[in-house]
Structure formats: structure tokens, C-alpha cells
Length: 261
Image 1 (spheres, rainbow, N blue to C red):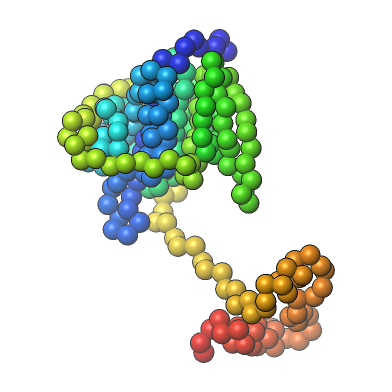
Image 2 (cartoon, one colour; image 1 turned 90 degrees about the vertical axis):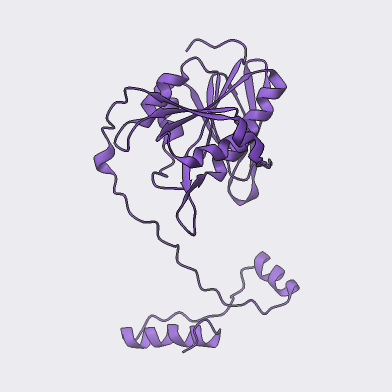
């Protein structure tokens, strides 16, 4: 792909989330982090900031992004069965740097949009970004890895960057900015999403809570057990009927007060 020139435009893709308690529409915290990083980069490099949303332009939650610093939110109007990635990619052609959240926090939170948009654009994609630095026509990114690890990666522009929720920035909400900004819907011809029938929409379910016995050993004993292969106790029940095995599990739960019956 032909490299784009100076970093003169930065785009941020924002979504509408649902509040975890009352289910009301609100801004996505992950997208708000991506917006704050984009604002900082745009100010540092004199780039034009564009904030895009594919969906319903009448959703009041979009004004939250104005309060978080977006001067304007351009809404590409499309429905639930339309291909939002294709609509956004058509608008983003020529933009050197595109930032998104890792995933939405609402209905269609598959996490596939950054990948599909990058594929449609032919851009490189870097996910789980914690911070970004731009040097000439390249970006340097600190990437989040499991278990507290970090990795530094570089990529040439143009690129799509999915920002991790733990990025070290703090979005700041100001009502005056919401009153000064605008949400501008744009009617576009959106293609039908060929994969929409393969998805099943269902209410989110709370993850089960893992039962764990309270650790009563001293710190020194726990450190020793972590560095040696000594047995930590417990029983392996192989013989017996299913009822006897269930009684053994129930006895363990009662012993460690994980159940109250």
C-alpha cells in the first residue's frame, strides 16, 4: 500500500454503550479513552480530529462524547442489519491514523469492528494499545499483555489502533463542551451485512463466581509452596459412587465455609 504523507487527520470511532445497572444508553468508557488519546495526539501534531459513529444519529448518548472533548460527532446513519464496518471504511479512506476502543459495552460488542475496518481499508492493525507516540510516518505503541507484561511495537502509517481500557489517560467530562459541540447525521447508502444472520442476540449473563478457600497460611509458607513442588493437601476421590463423590465435595465446601448449609 502507498504510504500516506503527513499526519494531518486522526479519526476516532465511538459507539453507544448500555449502563450496567439501568440499561440506559451512555458513552463507552473504552471509546472515551481512545478519544482522549486522539485529542492529545491531534493537539501535539496539529492534526484535524474527526469523531465518527455508525448508527442512529438521534441517540442522546452521543452528546457525551462532545462533553468529553469531541468538537463534532459525525454520524453515518445505518441500521442494525447494515454493514457498519464497510460504511466507516468508505469514510476513513485517506485518514492516516484511526483509533477505536477494544470493543463496545452494549448490544453488538463482538470486538470485530476494528479488525473488519482495518481489513477493508488495507491498514495495519495494532490492538490493546496503552499509549502511542508518533515519529515521522511511524507509530510506537506500548501494548498490553496478560499477567502484567508489556510490549513495545512499531508500525508504519496508515494504521488502525484499538486502545486498551487500562490506558493511562483520564477523560474529563464538561457540560459546557456538550452545549458547544454538534452531532451531525449524514445519510449514507449502507450495504447489508452478509453475516448478520449468523449472530444471535441475547441478554448478557453475569459470570459465575469462583469459590476459593480462604488462605490461612503465613506469607512465608505461601512463598515456600510457590517455589517448591510440595503437596498443598486435599483428596483425590476416584473410587466410589457419584453420591459419595458429591458428599466429598460438599464436605470440602462446608469445611472451608464456602456454603452455609
